[in-house]
Image 1: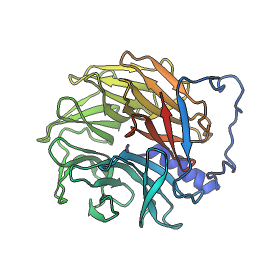
Image 2 (image 1 turned 180 degrees about the vertical axis):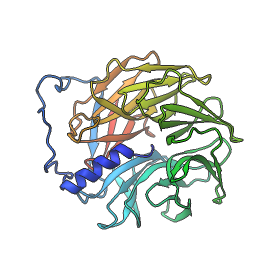
Image 3 (image 1 turned 135 degrees about the vertical axis):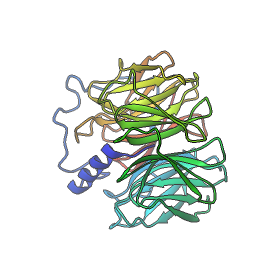
Length: 360
């Protein structure tokens, strides 16, 4: 997952209003469910189930990221306001049961943007607010690597036995590489001035691909640090956000503000898909599914705090999009999504402090 810029603003606003897992508070839809344009589908071909087994302290806890760990379980970052307690990393089984919880103290407003399994059998977390990369063993031992003021975003295990991540800092942006011992290398040459890097993934060509929400670009970086940016075919102002390697040999990305899913080949040819996405929606995260399609999350009507448009989406290799919302709480706020160890799609519900599972 990535630098949850827009979600962070929304969560901060909701926490400030006292809105939590109970769904109560001063934030209410201007248009109630059941009216034209917001009706749910009567029957979805996808079964969605929600689980309530995360550390629950409303309205402070909010899960932000999840990944399949080296032990085959799901691991979830569950953040909390630093004045209310410690952030948690929870282990979740295929049945949705929490079996382990490890806590660590945030010293700034918490924001664990992403989590990924490393080649060393540990989990690696990008803590943007505290400006650090965390390494956590499956037994709960944390090691912190400071980034000297930079805020890490999406993180991924690279093809070279190192972790790669995007980062933003006051002076600019960079793609960074960190070894298992914490040796850090940053790459900036070739990144446009003013860019805001978000997510990063390993492409089918062995290079790393990343998104730039400011400037509306997708970037590619080789293991040696050569960067190429692509913007042709990407709608201006669309804010490319999450990116993943697809089963079709291309990269797929969300356009948070554009309400579209983009596809880019390894040669830089872009195709955008929007038909089937509800008007005003902002796709957030996406992941390749076991069915050969790309699955994505939608957490709210973009630019509002009305939190009424939670959906799980699916796009085929040919660009056919479906949205699913039956059995999903409209206030769920689904953000990061992954294919779980059970070949189902798992996601976190950042507004309700839950995990969810979609079964095709």
